[in-house]
Length: 294
Image 1: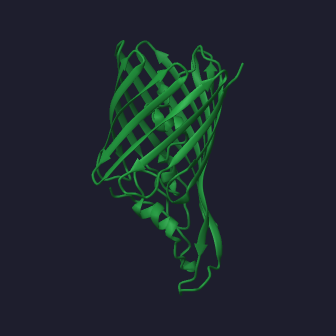
Image 2 (image 1 turned 180 degrees about the vertical axis):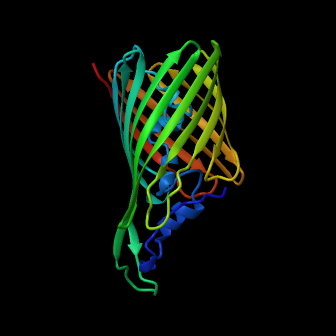
Image 3 (image 1 turned 90 degrees about the vertical axis):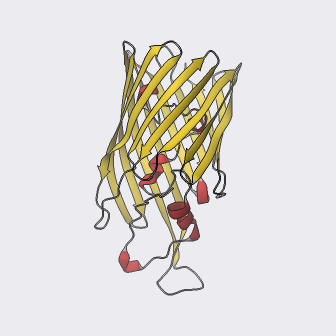
């Protein structure tokens, strides 16, 4: 898989990136980086368990007749990238609304001059942050959703701000069958030095087969940072107060499996998610803590 990571650095500093950033920006497995690619890193453990979530398709946000929910998420992605997230979702009039705030970053990259030195000049950070509002509603057999994101991306002392839109559509022609399509990260960033960081535009289509307690799906994605199509297959289910799921991802030269388990007790739930790829760059892991509000 060929990834283009738009890491724009001050040329006058002649910075050599720490090995961690090399892993993140060049060898990175499926869709994760500190750059605008942070938008392709799942924001929570639930998004590793459930492929068909509001993160990949805003029309799938469904809180109608459900109590509001607050969630906190923390994770370690590849090469030491850390992720933090806050999420609220609830019913708004006849539809569903959500607020997501997240941070993805590295804070221990070495700043070095052009010539080799025994010690670095110092350490610097690279991070991406976003605040997103989502709203979804139903019209007949169609479920529609839209999300607006405010974005901030910084490397060393250089930063860029931007906005992006997500659109989603779901169609359920029969009780057990549902089709979903979405377009994500449609927008632009401001200039960083003389460059415009490129957003990872994603177009995803999926089909879901709902068999009582279990759901199975297949999906395909086109990503502007990935040369070849990305294919997904998997399922999820629930047994009493346990939820679980897994997803297999395949693209040219890259394979991975993600999944996890969650447990619900009263108004609280704890969810664990992981991802493992055949590039042997480590195993990202995430954990969520959620509370359902009265």
